[in-house]
Image (tube, rainbow, N blue to C red; front, side, top):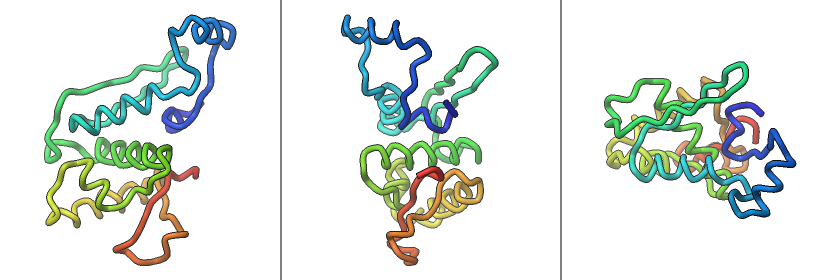
Length: 146
C-alpha cells in the first residue's frame, strides 16, 4: 500500500493473524490507528508524522513540538496533505481556514496558509474540489487520489 494511503486505506499483511487479533480484541478492523496518530499530531501541534518505507519494513518518525516558523517546506507539505486526507476521511472539506487552524495561525496569516496550499498543489499531493466552484475564498481541497 502506498504511504500516502495509510490514512484512509486498510490492508493486512497477515490476514489470519489479524483476524485472530481482532477476535481477541487486541486490534480493530476499521483501521483508524493512523488517523488517530495524525489527529493527535494536529491537536498537540506536532509536525506531521513521516512514513519511511524500506525494503521489508515501514518506519514512522514522530517528532516533538515544533513551532510553525521552524517547520521546513517538506514538513508543511506533509502536514497539509495529511490534514486534507484526515478531513476527507471525516467527510469534511479542507479549506484555508481549517489548515490555518491546524497550524494555529492567526487570521492575518491566511496568505501564509494559501502559500502552503499552493505548494502542496504544485507537489501534486492535493487538488482543488471542483464541486466548490472557482472562488478562491470558498475553495476546498481533496487528496490527489480522491
